[in-house]
Length: 283
DNA sequence: CCTGAAACCTGTCTGC
DNA sequence: TGCAGACAGGTTTCAG
Image (cartoon, rainbow, N blue to C red; front, side, top):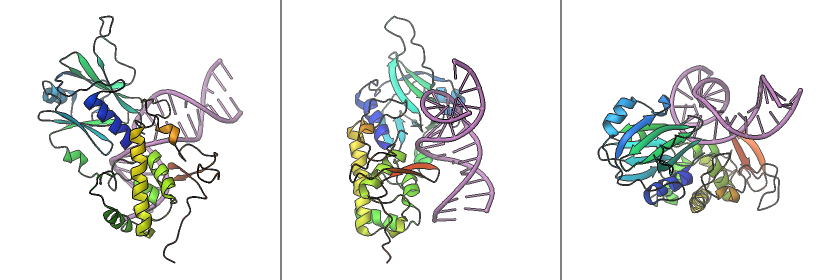
């Protein structure tokens, strides 16, 4: 659920503060706690402590849907998957007593200044990796959709080589890094393309339109501080701007036709049957 | 290369 | 009211 705009929002908060997050740049790790073993993708809590305690946060970045926390000699990579969230707070409450951890806190970094970073993850799908070489984890990720180096020409070349349906292709993190179910549905709607259309059949003009649509919905999502859906509220507002996602049975904002929902590759897919039709450019 | 299903999880909603 | 069952979503893994 946290997709590129949600992760970007969290990363910006960790860098400059916002909402329930204060900046963590320059903080040094004093202790590490792990309450669900599998949240740590590999290695043990002992190794994590040995390598992280005493290290200082040098930078916080995003790559695809990963949060990348750069320490002196290590990188801590966090993938929030579906229900993960990050929180910064004091380890001691206003009452002077140690602040208890929250219900689904899985991994906690305590800093020397008395604050802490908590990785909270209800569904336990989220993962953290500690590595000296981030490429080891991030290496297979595809292009960043907002990277200016991704020109319409390059994008069309990438698209035209793939014989997959647009929806699963755009969800594929080795193709483009950062899109998830919400932003793919929204982008396909804006581009007026059917989720089942085969990628290689797009004309250069259509693929350019798709790239523009992807960037437009991502930028809008970032401007809204991401989307807050289900019970995971992160303060974002993009959920109020959905055109098709979770709008089954409601009118299309463009033409009034009833929005439909179908399953594509096991994923709920929302679209307007009038605005998004399969076009056959080969004829 | 591509598709589909199952697994990993828990909270919430639906229906009996 | 209670309880079983379906469902949601991101990714990996495995079979075809």
